[in-house]
Length: 184
Image 1: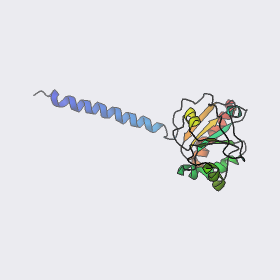
Image 2: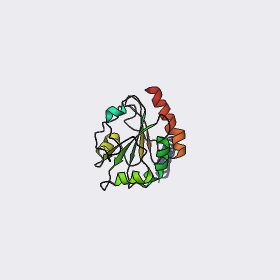
Image 3: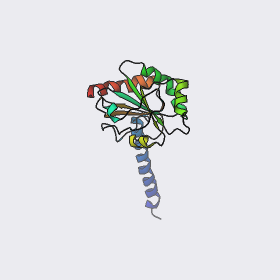
Image 4: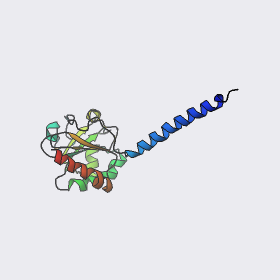
């Protein structure tokens, strides 16, 4: 039997293992919560949805292009990480120059989103109900929570997947808001 009969599979294995190793190393360079989005540097999709409640007005795409940077957060009452980030969103909304809009995503019960915000505080200056999840599809939302930074021209500049915490806000979100202000 030829020596190649034993060497060829070992070489093939080594080549495949090398590709996997280098592929995993490259994957480490991009944090898992910063997912590439086809919408970065593109106009935000339209948002024509009803308000969640009578206390907070709805918004549309024109409101996102009104000359100020907006942070758009997709959340749901059934989402445990959304509950975890509620305090940070309330703190973020109190920061000068930060405008926070909310999209209540795929609620299972009528009024659940409003009850969630009544319990944990409503950080949103505008708020809509995406019961069917169609606007979420337009925005490329895979799950909640997801947060977007939209510049004053209505262009998406940043997407973060997962719950916001103090570190994410200071290290990633606030610098992206500052960049978006410069782009406006």
